[in-house]
Image 1 (spheres, one colour):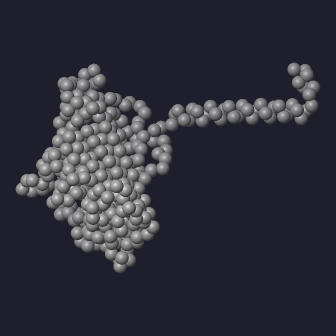
Image 2: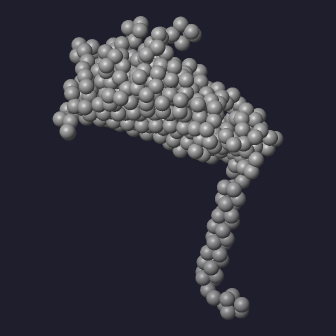
Image 3: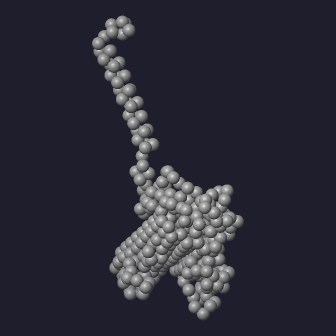
Length: 375
């Protein structure tokens, strides 16, 4: 110790400065660590998202798990060892942040209860096959559900802040027929494999498979702020992906394939369509605007990408069709029948020229590459 104080004053001060600096760094690290573990769930950042609810964080406390099985019996717990039979029993127990697991062949279910922004109610399929799923509650997440044999819409969303991911809808909309024999009844009804209906806002459909339905594949009818991405759509009776009278919609990185197994009036379905139908059951009016069709791949449909004329002949506002691939189109690769108010068709790889009214100043067609479709 005596030797220490006999050192030059500058060296002593230097050593003291270094020691204090190291201590401050250690204190700072401890404070940051404590702040991280004490952070509330609603303080978590969501990162870059196209929509508000891209990745709604789960509540980290008080998450319960309930189980439904076709071999279960209703009871007060619906736990793993004592699964319930009916969805209604588990829904009655579930609170925001909870998860309901489904197993086996089940009837159609409807969820009316809502989660919360940082605590959605989750429906998780575990080899479950349903007759249909209707989502009326807000803040609902659905994963790995398979719907087979639904009479009308396979999965119907008519609420807000909903995620449907990695699910399958097939052989549904049986009110119109089955197994490719569609439209055989007195009246054709327009059910869809996966349907977004008026009242639905901030919805994500991601990584789903929709095929072999006697109706539309994925349909958005009067929806707002909808994201469709990485879905696979096979042959259906009507349009593969139908974006109708909706706004703030992004359809990106989806794949649509058509063949002759499902035909309407002898023709294959259209691939991805933007349209503006008017409906008499509300005050929605015409709100088809701000739609992006990006980086999709459509193969073998009657027309692969279309913008249909709106029912009131008003222009479609702010439609971008960019970076897509069109292969083996029967009629047109891209067909723009609607009047344009800033419709841009750009940077697409297509097998036939874009069909549009070149005299419409609201439609811009630029930098598209026409290729010969490989055999």
